[in-house]
Length: 320
Ligand code: TXD
Image (tube, rainbow, N blue to C red; front, side):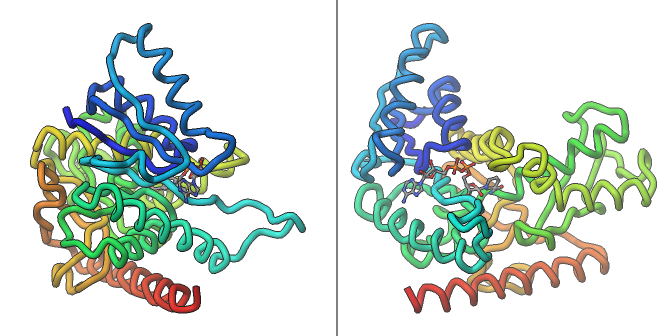
């Protein structure tokens, strides 16, 4: 159990995190910061605190609109951002408009972390994932073990679920990794997919697997379309908590992590979804796994997309 864990952004994902962190007894104190008026963060924490006597967990809460509530947090999970929604004139913001709004938010988030909990391990969830975690690394200026993004755990979970469903087996039997950027170029690694240790091809044919991998790439959009507003929020929160528990309990768990590569996979200085060992000090080691020629090609495309996003961030930041 940590003394204090902070959540930045108490929206849909942050709300699930704030319920789960005390309920799983991951921290003695939960901090929540959200700029939403009148004081949404305080309201959500008061609601959860009231329910604690029913569920049976003791926790303290530091909540409010200012980042000072994050003081001395050991772990931060960042969900702060604005989703893509119609502007007053009914048109949707362009990707660049949304990116510049979210980069401004990330600047504030980064400064808040630097001022109040500069030693905290930071898991960033906010989208566009690759851009936000890259910008955060520029602001926090730390080595790569204490800042990384959560996307691959969710993308891998989706792949695992679709494989289990098609193969008629328990989700607990399916191991899978989705690597690369968190977008349409993400790469489900079929050659690493196992069902109870056996190659997935023993259970599903190539046509079925290709369809599942395509569905995995679009699974976020599938939920968005069905919800009508907002995006997936339970599975992202649970995925971030799998990373948090690997840190808190020093599990040395191998997970798909958006980590800053330093030469691995031919990438240097950019965040890429890669298999990594997660433990007490955060992202402890990037693992380079063997890939088929086809997987290498697809990962190369994803790396190019991540490079393009980083260049976009640099040019927008320069103009802010
Ligand atoms: O796998 C993944 N990484 C993705 C991430 C999976 C699904 C959702 N993905 C993204 O996470 C999503 O596109 C958003 O960028 C974030 C959070 O998603 P959520 O659904 O929780 O968004 P909400 O409900 O809009 O919550 C965001 C909160 C909201 O309450 C704002 O008031 C708050 O962020 N916010 C801030 N908090 C603190 N500080 C600042 N500056 C701030 N700006 C907004």
